[in-house]
Image 1 (cartoon, rainbow, N blue to C red):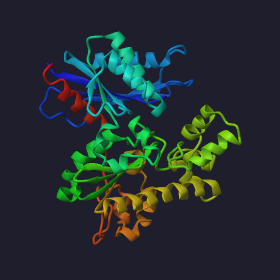
Image 2 (cartoon, one colour):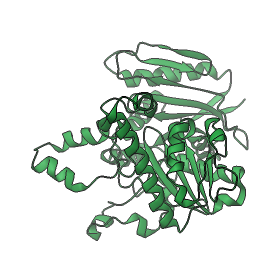
Image 3 (tube, rainbow, N blue to C red):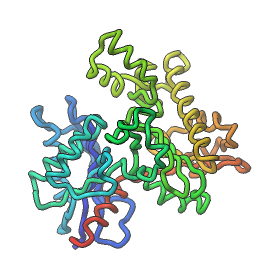
Length: 395
């Protein structure tokens, strides 16, 4: 009988899931079964998995998120085939200043994690709702929280402290960093791809609907672009990235926008969508940039911010040996990668056009002073490994 863990990655409108066998010493990196419920809060939610094409499902309008979870659990039970589900592991975006390692969730932990909702309002509430509902369904089934902030626990103090009165740092207002499960996987995977070169000055660009950079030395996080919240750093699909705080003061004091309205703008109406007025997806903007000036401007600003932050991070690291693209845009959008690498000529990068178009593992040209890679991330596998390690005496 195999021992299985279900990994859940809960967002505001979707839940991704994967089923892993953690009874083996080395967990297979591909899930036994995986899928996604999408559009949960919309009029036409859909479900699809590795055995089933996406199709519309009825979730009801009163508690659609809870019904989506129940739908996933029911489908999971049908996939057990006599094996045993021993835990559910959750990607939880924010662990605050208290949680640096995966933890089994109880009522006290759940209370703590709710206090971090204002720091990650797009993700935190939905992961916690999933944990709470699943504890109600089966109180004896371990729920394991794996934190996106944990990998950045190695940031030096000079990177953690924000230039505010020091008392703010003592209250926990500091740089936390996010996308940690993705970066943690890269720290394991890059030596497999590039050997000891990965232990030098490496920048990983996690480019998805949310986006950030992590500067690593000896495979440890030494700098990252996201900060106290997931709003800082790079321009994103609908989030602004780094912004002059004077703009926010002006909006609230002069334009009389409420904090809630400003928050809605920063999280949901800015970034590529806000500048272009068209879409948050670079693929859509690339298709229309020739005739839509604002699409062209949004893409130019998006790339410039990535290039600028890579340059600044390389300076903080004292050099740059390797740049790694990962996540949805980083793994699949050759044109964005080309524009970024072309902007990094001053750091010694030369692009292999054919390799880039083919989404090859190495996209830097022979003779390039610095190495550019494309590497697929695997956050769900990392969460499964954490559950295995945490529960090893209970399995």
